[in-house]
Length: 227
Image (cartoon, rainbow, N blue to C red; front, side):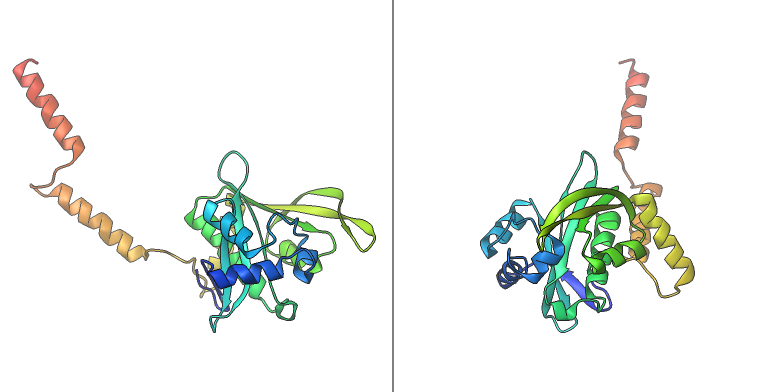
């Protein structure tokens, strides 16, 4: 998954070490993202990722340097996901890396995994994420009162969500207003169309066989013989 500034790739062992540093309980990133500490070591992150409990992607810049991580996990009964992550170096915040990384993650979930609903929770003091959520089409679903504790007092948490129809509404708007916009496609549309033509030509030809045609032939033979 590749954008203009970053790309998402599966983590290496070195990336898990970075995640442990970035999201450790005493890090600035953990404070800003209100990480709840379910993983604290590189092995914790690796084990969660490989078990499927938390599917992670490293965020790499155009030079191939790992600058952050994003993740998702299934949530709810049907096609729902929770997302999270951050850019690891505070000096790289507000430069568009995080916004594009989450855009790529949303594209993957809605456009490749058939997600119906994606949600995340952020602390009321995280102005960068709140600014991103309010500009990206997310819907504020609720406020968890005094959910986090920081600097001697409690802070509310905010739950945001995006539904499939809302995501594709944004996509259609971008298609109309940005001539350069295009959703990432794993297989080009032209290749998909050619694949359909191959099957159609096969079925239209005299040598073409399908399970439906064979079934009809068998029923006709049984009818003719009185079976």
